[in-house]
Image (cartoon, rainbow, N blue to C red):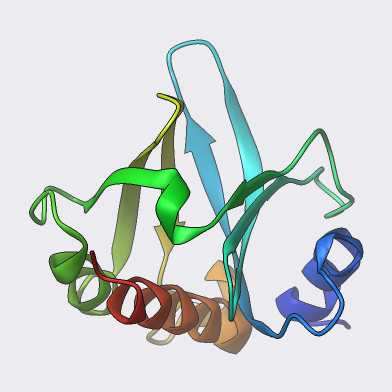
Length: 144
């Protein structure tokens, strides 16, 4: 049986630019006033890619491609409004709610499980944990 990373990569890899390094991918539930969907969040050496995915992890809809300069605000479960707090907050929590606003005003709220402990495999296992670690590192590296 394929792990979560192997299932999500086909939805993400076509979105990578030549030479762009995929550092990790995790899955979460995007929620908003009039929508809810499953998304893959891919962390690369250059940007974040948020791609809606179907129940079978196929790409669903247009991706949101976020370079550091396209993100105007970010927080994790109320951990500050600045980027400096986001990386450690992602690593500390069992479940994470990432909230961000783009420079053009688009809002994103994604709930993710860390997938640790005895039932971690049910939450995405090692690939989910590694994807969240890559996401935390990306925010720490690009702290504004």
